[in-house]
Amino acid sequence: MENKETNIKNIKIRVCKNVIRKYFFITFAAIGYGGGIAIFLDKNNLVPGGVSGLSIIINRLTGINTGTIIFIINIPIVILGIYKLGFSVMADSIYAIIISSAAVNFLESLKPVTNDTFIAAVMGGVIVSFCLGIILKEGATTGGSDIIVMIIKSKYQYLKTGVIFLIADIIVVLMSAFTFDNIDYAFYSALTVVTSSVILDMVLYGRDEARLLYIVFKNSENEDILAGRLLVELDVGVTYLRGYGVYKNKDKKVIMCAIHKKLLPKAKEIVKEIDDEAFMIVTSANEIIGEGYKSHYAKTL
Image (cartoon, rainbow, N blue to C red; front, top):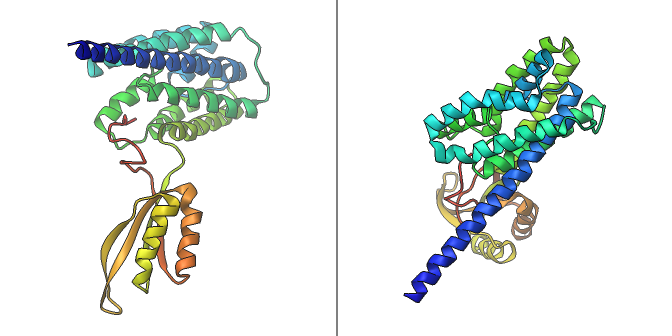
């Protein structure tokens, strides 16, 4: 009985720690997101796309604070999100929207960090997308197109988040060209959008993509030697595939190995040392799920 109560207590403590951790990261990222918009983009007439970019455009037309506009536009979108995804899913997003909107209003009174439009476009895009990626990884959004993307992803999980954002953001960037009556701002805003798309996918999916190796030796003895060295020296799994060489009418073992990109040079070196005439195919593996890589329970973003 005592052990059961202790286990329950430990579970509650662990859940509490996870909640505190999640809201710490959401708060930190939401403030950073708002800062990127207010200090880098808004100050230099640049739009990041989506609701934030649309809010900057409306701000120029009405004079209403950008953060306030972001919050107002998000009200019907949040209602749609609650209807489609449920309140429990949207609760974290509502919190992130409030924090990020307040951060935009609070920080817009500060002086811009830079007046160089190019630097502002790149740095603004990096900061906004990096913080947005953290928020999305914690299961929340900053509202606007984020929620729409989440709804789309719930049905079409194969679509990459950054690509969906890119399409939506291009529309807003085109609108900014007419609002500011300056094509240069639109081009710099497009740079922000492209930068954001790249950084967002980097944060969500990582850029240390794996490589998939297929190796065929002329001498069958080399197969076991290579498999052993890969296991010991690189600590990676190796699989034998059954192959058939048509030219010599002979059964062959094909070595298949998935490794992190940073280990590829060493793997090539090992193959070369064993047989510099070995036939090796190297392909990209954008996503690998299993031991040593992404968990089967990882969130699909």
